[in-house]
Length: 160
Image (cartoon, rainbow, N blue to C red):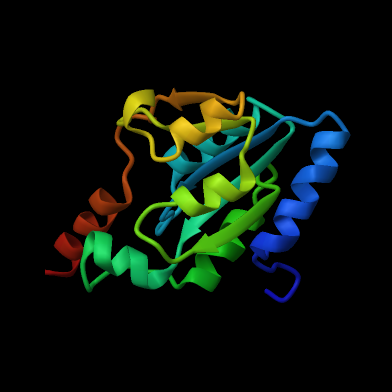
């Protein structure tokens, strides 16, 4: 697992400037990605297709606990990062500890901010700063039938 490491925000912002100079389109999304499943894979492939570089803002363990309860995450931040960085569609993963990625998005100012189909562009955190900087905000439909919460419930049901 040593070949993968989380990006450091300051270094990622510097790299973002290099990508910008190279004319590359940077796409950003965020989430917990607790149990990686086909819905995540499809979503990340579709997100990458919107640009040249895909950055994922990954909730750290404490922020997931605040959002989803004490039993989550199932996989640690390090494990989730390793799984995401192993995907061909993912270029960088950066962790954040706040409840939303607003500060991360404000620092990176991606060309494209994308979230899953349960959002509308109006309620995506950071949409205002991305659009003010000339970026684009969009959503990608989810692959039906897949969710980490549903997988966890299924595992629990098997154990009882």
